[in-house]
Length: 123
Image (tube, rainbow, N blue to C red; front, side):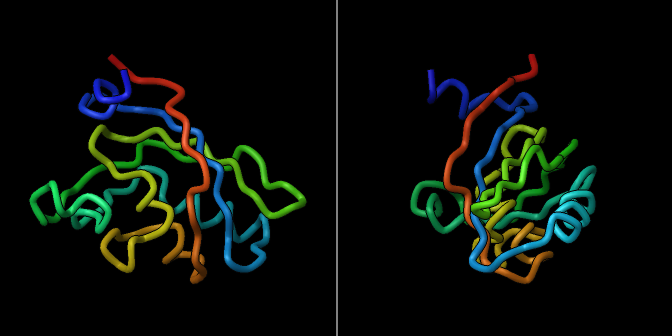
């Protein structure tokens, strides 16, 4: 089932649990997330998969992205709806500049996806 979901090119919706190296304000986080919504993302093949994929730059779209919750202990829960084939973890982390724009790049601090759930696959 996981392999099938990963290989589909349909739009997908994810719920991400994100952490930050430094504290981030809700206002700043919302502004950066808003910037990413409806944006074309340029992604060079992520380092974590480049050994099994062609090292090329792909263009994918973030259809929508929103902050679901920012917890007192510094976690953010973010909902992302995007074009199939977008590497969502790298949309957040930036993958050392291989994904632009990214949440980490916009915030100017290291961000990491701690947990990722696919909550919908459009057919």
